[in-house]
Amino acid sequence: MATISILDIVEDTTVDGPGFRTTVYSAGCPNCCPGCHNPHSWDIANGHEVDVEDILKVILADQFADVTFSGGDPMFQPAGFAALAKAVKERSGKNIWCYTGYLFEDLLQNAQQKELLEYVDVLVDGRFVEVLKDESLRFRGSSNQRIIDVQASLQHGKTVLLDI
Ligand code: SF4
Image (cartoon, rainbow, N blue to C red; front, side, top):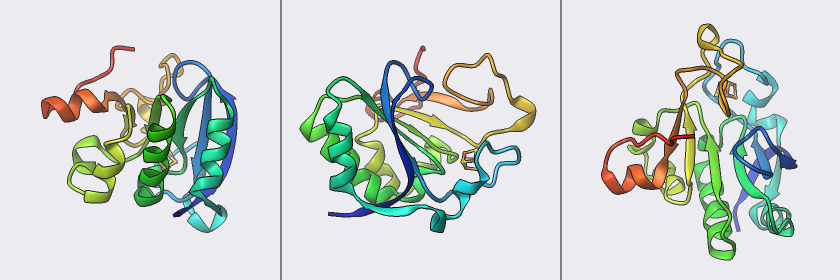
């Protein structure tokens, strides 16, 4: 199976989507947002390669936690995350959130990134913009970022925001 370069896996997070979640922090991000919370994540060499199957075991070991892909930018390694997301969906009913600095509409133009979207329930998209930072926002850092219902968006052929 594929490998993914990751920084960490953190269990039972409560800030990366609703409820308790297992968050996989991807290494590598091309977006270079000024004010980024974790510039260390930009260089994919700062991560370590882990088999998708081993990440899957950690995710499935927690019967109750849902799943979030964060980073870094998971859309920088779309093939590995698509394999992981597909396996999560095949072997559990877990809900998947994904954070990315790319825009949803741009991801649809890339075959591998679009494939990953097919297994994602919710996408938080767009770069972090420091002047739009708002600490009162739930699950996002700046007000330009959108919380998108991916499956409804794919079904209707237009971007559908999640009413959170
Ligand atoms: S997309 Fe996220 S990880 Fe990447 S530079 Fe922007 S804030 Fe940092």
